Length: 128
Image (cartoon, rainbow, N blue to C red; front, side):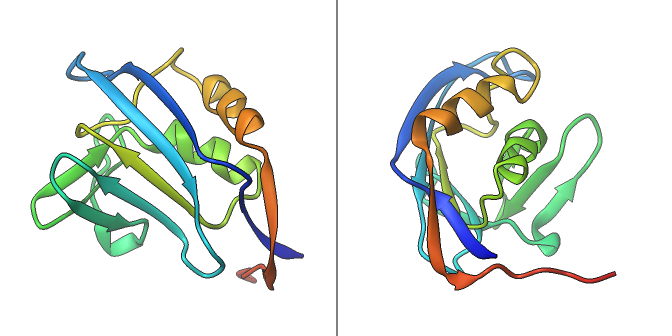
């Protein structure tokens, strides 16, 4: 198995669940071994999706770095996982992911629009 990313950048605008403000989200492809990376364009901060960056799990999964957070990432990430995507840049202009319809379905439709692209590097797997 090889690592995957998206074939092309895609964008969506929706409302944040907890604050009710409009959020613009853009997904961009990344090269092998880059992982899933969140970028808060309004704050200029990159937050890699790593366990040490999880700052809260009450009511939503929240990652953060240097006091900047991105909240409500779980539905987007479930779609990303379902599509086997290993490398992706998620760019947002607010502190949460848009809620869309409250499920992963809208994110799946967005990923369908983007398509997937297989990379040369082998997929990293964890054996338990």
